[in-house]
Length: 336
Image (cartoon, rainbow, N blue to C red; front, side, top):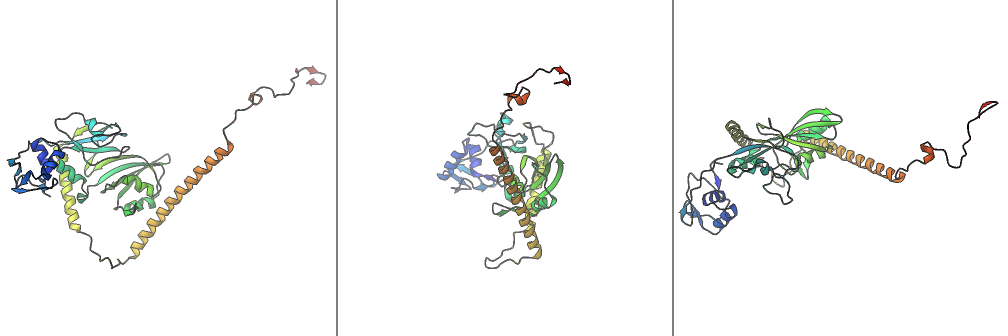
């Protein structure tokens, strides 16, 4: 895609000073022409340098907008949307008032912290988030338990999540501390809660999750809630990185077409991989069952014993009820 290509509704919104929704209606009502031909699809992509856009016969010339690129260290308990119906704090609100409106590039879950980009450059955001470009994102996860090397290898090979295989991930074991583990995971996908679900699938719950990098851009020098503008060099390196990813994907080519009636021949390596993944998933499921049974047994034991009763007064140091106390006197045979 040409880097100058824009969505028609966005161009009209900027040039006519109307909302994106109003621009959509203008296009659908046949009021817009591109290169002299009417266009009815607001999402049409076109190059402003090669074709003229007219609204009701009048040529549209958008006000040149300065491109802004921001790196934010998203803290916990913050949503990445522009507004939140529940009144929770949003990522754009942490930036404050700027000369132009910026929006988040992609999303981070409510409890996931780390690197979040905001911009007013729609093409830049599209390239960062579209699967075609395969932009890698690196996360650092804190796990409730320590995974075995064989379990991490399952993530490296890919595993089924909700009926669909994940792509192979880059996994690095970082640290073990107090029965917990820190692990980094690099993926080029963006499914809902994907990182947490991948670790859940091998039996290890994520308690903390932070995005540490997007492609070559790393989260360095910021504290949660702080932000800064990207440098010209960082923006250029990100664009060059995305260009390389497209070339690499094109060189690999599409997967070979296999007729539906033709069954793919399974190699010994395929069978071994499938067996390893199956065993790892079964072990993780069994581990969850054992933990669930243990928790249920503890709950039953606590219910059977009932609430702890306070000790009687005589067990706390007072004399036992119904017993007489005699003075200690000295007799012929000593103390009585």
